[in-house]
Length: 488
Image (cartoon, rainbow, N blue to C red; front, side, top):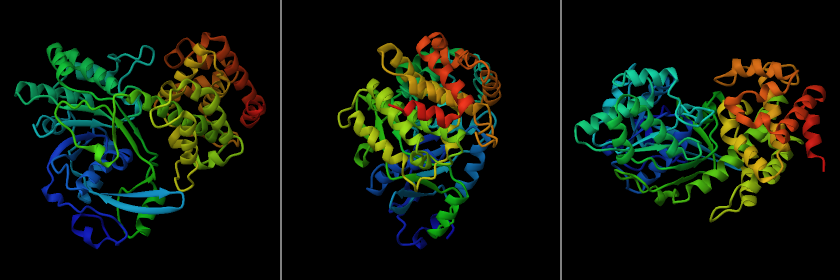
C-alpha cells in the first residue's frame, strides 16, 4: 500500500497511524535537516502529542539547504510528508506512521522560500539537525569560524545566504523590521551545550553584517540546550524491504531502537509544545545528562566503530559481540570515561554503561560501523578528546583512549587489516589519509594535527601511549594491541 493520506485507513491493522485530522493541523515549527534521526525523535514526540489531541498548531514544516534535502523533499511530498517508523526491539518489531510534518519547503539558491517561511508569525520555533560538524566552530579555539567560505559569503550577502544560519539571520531581520518578534532556535545535534553553540553561530554571523540585529537576536531569541538520544540507522534496501514486509510502500521509512530520550532547558521565547506529556524531560541540568550521553554513548560509539572498521566487523551489534571490541568498550567506559562523568538524578554512571551496552548489543539494529565512524574529525574532538584532557588533568588512565586514537589513525590510512579498502569517510578524508600514511613511520605526525589535538601532542603520558599503540598496531595488528590493553 503506497503511503499517503488517502491510504491511511487501508494500512495493516497492526500499524499505528494518526488519529487526528491532518488537514486541520497548522504550522508552528520549521525544522532544518529532515534526516532519519529527526523523524524518529523530535517529530515522533510531537506526533504523540497530536495523538492526545494536543499541539495541533505546532506542526512541522521541513526545510534544508543541501542537494540531499531536495531529494528527501521530493520523496516526502510524494507521500504527504508521512513517515513509517519501525521500532526494532531485541525480541519484537512494531510500526507506526507519524503525521506531525505537513510540508517541505523548496530548496533554492539563496534560500528565499526558507527565509520567507521562517519570517511568518506562526513560526515560533526553528529547530535543526545538521550533524555535529555543521556549526562553523573553529577546532582550535572552539569559537566561531568566520573564515569559512560560506560564512564569508553570508556575511557579505545577508539577503542571499548559503547556510541555514544565514537564512535564520535573514528571517529574524525581517521579523524585527515588521514587528513580529523573535523565535526560539532549538539545536538537536549532539554537541555539548548545543544551544550555546547555536547561539554563538547565529549571533556571530549576524554581527558580520548587522551588529544591532545581532544584539537583538542575542537578547530576544532563546537558544535552549538539549540532549537527544536514540539510535537510528541509515535507510537502505533492507529497511525499504522491511517496510514492504509490513505492507507499506514507504519511500523513506525509518528504523530505530526501542529507546528515546529528550532532555531540554525550558527556555522558549515564543511558547512550545508540552513535550513532557509524552516523555521528554524539562530540566535546568541538561549539561549533566548530555555530558553522560556524549562521553559514554557517543564516545563509546567511536571506541567500538573505529576498531570495527579496521577489523572488518560490519555492525555495532557485531562489534559488541566481538571477543575484543566489546570488552574494549566495557573497560574504557568503566575505567577511563565514567570516573570523569557525574551521575544525574535518576541514573548512576554504572547503570548508564549497562544500558548503553544493552542498546549497542541489540541485534535488530543494523547500524554499520562505517556510519558510526563517519566524520571522525568532528566526533573525536567532541566525544573522545575531552575525556583524554580530563583524564590527564585528574590523573586517571588514558591508555585505552590513546589506543582508540591510534586505531583511528590506522583506519584513516584507508585499508582494513584484511587488505580491503576503506572508502573516504570524513569531510577531510584526504588530509587525514595523508597524515595517517605519514604517521605509519612517525606516529607524532598524527598528533601534530593541532586543529584536532591542540597541545595533546606535547603531553608525554598521552603522546607516549599513542605512539606505542600505533607502532604495535602496525607491527602486530590491532587485535594484538587491544588484547594487550585488556590484559590485567
